Structure formats: structure tokens, C-alpha cells
Image (cartoon, rainbow, N blue to C red; front, side, top):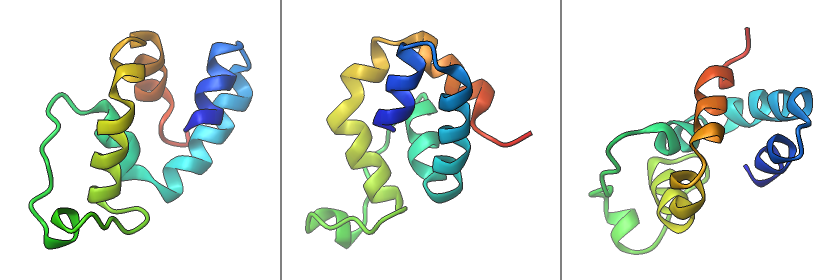
Amino acid sequence: MGLIYADFKTNKIKSAIKRLHEFYIHYPLLVEEILSDKHIEPKSIEYELGYASPGSIEEAYDYYKRTSIVWENNPDFIEFLMNNKQSK
């Protein structure tokens, strides 16, 4: 997600869209968590133990929790994600 954000912020929009499409294939829950209006903490044993498997809702929530300040302060990037998350 960092490279997508960097490309977006440096106006490399085609690159950001291409990266986003690839990223979304592997991590759709992460993108959806960033776009969500409500961020609900997972109630799984794995999350309570501090474990999050790649691509899981636990990983998505944890990532959002750690980086929320970036997304909350960049509504233009959120709009970009919303409009470009899936391949057309």
C-alpha cells in the first residue's frame, strides 16, 4: 500500500492504479478495511493472541489501526482507492 500511496502523491496515477489492481487481488480485505466507515476489531482467537495470517481480516484491521492517521488525513487518496480498486 505504501508504494501505491507514494505513486499517488507524486502524481504517478497510472502506476498507482496498476499497483492497486495487483495489490487488490492479493489483499482485498485490507483495501476494504481502509475504505470502511466502521472499523470493528476482530473477535478471533488469532487476533487476541496477536497473530494475523496474510490476507486475513485480522491483518487488515491491524494494518488499518497502525496507519489510520494517514488515511484519515487523505480523503483524496480514499476517493482514489474507491474509484480504482478493481480492474475494469
